[in-house]
Length: 193
Ligand SMILES: [Zn+2]
Image 1 (cartoon, rainbow, N blue to C red):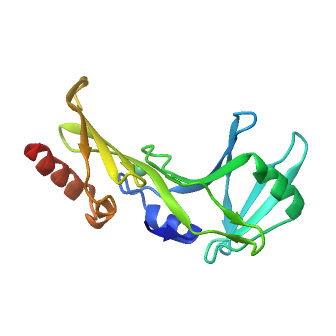
Image 2: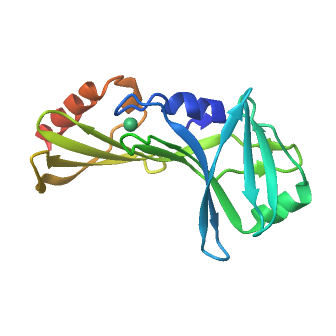
């Protein structure tokens, strides 16, 4: 399994594989106690990610992470430790144009070393099309599989093969370089099924 700095994740996801748009990064937080979730937009200046985490209705806690080496700092480490107690944090790359997205596995902060452990990819969704079909591709990096849903562009309720499950090495999706090559590969595998 490949491990990434935040910068690696941004480079991996940009530009959008499906539509070439630039992709933005945000932080998804799930609170296991309240079952509530939250998304925080991330600004990056001079390779430092800055996020204002909401620790209570009135209080915020600023977290800064160096995207090149994953070192982090925060205004108050005790508050940050408390913040992490019931919350899982995930980074997401989202394309606002076509809806493609990529999520990491849970971010693990090494409190002693003030360092965000290398990130691992969790899921990626891509939405691409050729002249006849829409291909919705759902990659699961943990299980190393991919589901592809193919629907007719002009008749979306008609799902050609419903869901095709692939077991191909997922990272090869990026090695295919273009969506046309990815579609070609999907169709080749489809014929063999
Ligand atoms: Zn896109």
